[in-house]
Structures are given as C-alpha cells and as structure tokens.
Amino acid sequence: MGQVGRPGLSAVGKAEMWERWRNGESISEIARALGKAPGSIFGTLGDKGGVAPPVRRRSWRCLSMTDREEISRGLAAGESFRVIAVRLGRHASTISREVDVNGGRGC
Image (cartoon, rainbow, N blue to C red):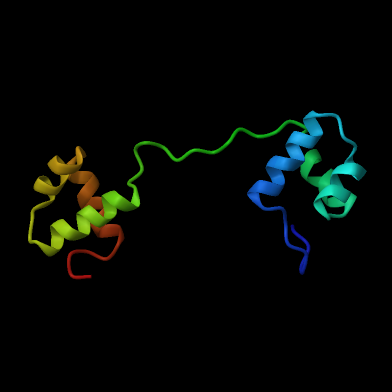
C-alpha cells in the first residue's frame, strides 16, 4: 500500500532509477538524485527483486483511439458493424463488442 501524501515516481523517474541502479549507484545516491526517500527507492527495487520489469506495451489486438473514432464516425453515418470492421481490418464481433461496452448505438 502506498504512502498518503507522497507521490510515487513518474515513468521517467522510474526509468532513471533503473538506469542508475544498473550503473551501480547506491540506493542513497539514487534517492538523492530523484529527491525521494531511500526507503521508497529500496521498496521499489525490492518489489522487483532488483531487476527492472519489461516495458509494458499495448497489444496490437487492442483498439486504438483512431479505431474508436472511426467506429464512432461509421455509426454516425449509419454504417453496419461489418462495413466498419472491413475498413478497420477487424472482425465485426470486435466492433459489436466495442459498441456494446460503450453504451450501444444510441450513445
């Protein structure tokens, strides 16, 4: 559980922390450089066993904002799920599911 009132490291801060750790800097040195308490750096490093987690990437199967905007435009134009799906290179069921999750055609 995180501490109240003490913001965590940003993505840039975490990347810098892991880079400094790989370069052999001590926890105290890293904490001073990032303006954080040594305990918070220790906790973050300890949670991951001192090994930087892989960078998370969104799956290619996930719809992008551009895809969602295209679905919205297609629905506004009265197009069927199948027509929208063909244009996006997706299955019609993917379009249907996305519309259902976000409130249906009427929204």
